[in-house]
Image 1 (spheres, helix red, strand yellow):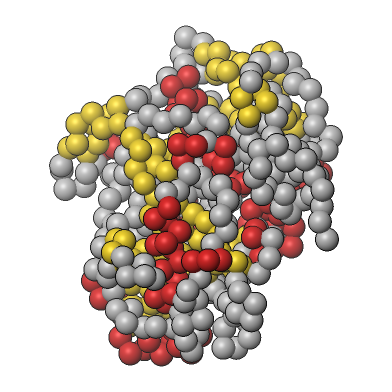
Image 2: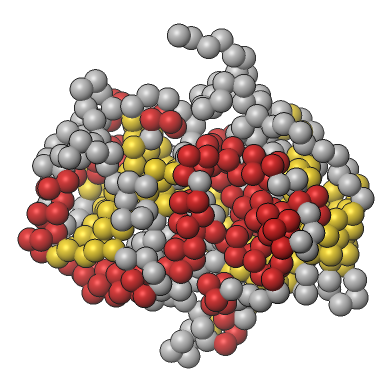
Length: 487
């Protein structure tokens, strides 16, 4: 069946909702639309107790949980929460994310954040599109100690997992996938509670929960700044549709965080003190990285299921000393880094989605237009060759997939912190910034923890390690044996 929908940008963006809005023009520039149909949005009110900026995963989760906790505790109502986004739900990185939900971090305190996040995913897996298929990570022997340390930290945070090494690692992998090629695969971590979520389904579920709990959802208003009093507190959020006074602000702006950070008076550079006493002077607060992700259709007769006829776990493989060659023998990279999940809901047919290490841009980047619409951030041709080659290096069934790579625009950028770990902290006394360092989609639970803090008054233990002040006190993170800033 062919769906005849006008598509002036010639992008294949019509999944999973056929009536997704066309990309609109703003001041003569095409911008990303919301990834879902929008119902019952309201005009900007003059005031609110809580204003949440950004309708990505953090803003939607914060607004939903704030409304729910206010109602359940009798401390307010959902209408006390106003959610603002210049386009609508999922128009930024959330709508483009690969959707992997995992706890593979060499930064120990993140394990509790992900445990809290998976609890949210588990709370309504149908409406969030959560597929709890597990997560399997594979490394070479030089990461064995890291995996053992990581697994112990996960267990201590209430997130049990299993580690296999040597021949046990090989047996585990070939038991799941008999055609898996185990060369250089020396250590395996298996996270049982992890998996993936269809990003558009997750956005739909979160937006509907905001709607059901009475959040005032203002879509189509662009935040242009903040009014601060003499102490640096936010008294109003400024938009292109007027000003809204408020008591508390939550900023979940994704790649736009540096702009909001500047408006709120946050530093652009800072001295970063590490636990060993080393000081990196005047580091950029923000560094942009360009994502490299794409999709591959599965040929007829090829699946991505396990030997037990189940959906495969999300797979992540980093072989730091293993070079990658194209299917015709060309050298591509001196290291192997690839992640993959089944993604029929994204591909529009049986297929896979994944990527590799992002590319560093620097402290400044053109955020607009975002993602698919920005020519600067499209993957070069080598990426498709590289990604398909990595799949063939892992599975006999996935050899020679290059002709099935889905040739369409992908792209996105993220704003990373000095240690590539999120900052969850106040600027001033009432502007809470969720600066996720591009770890965002999986961390749906940060919004819940934020709401608990604002309604109940005490900061949850999970959030405490992620202050801005860690860079001054020597609690900077950075003990990470990986080529990738996401690990």
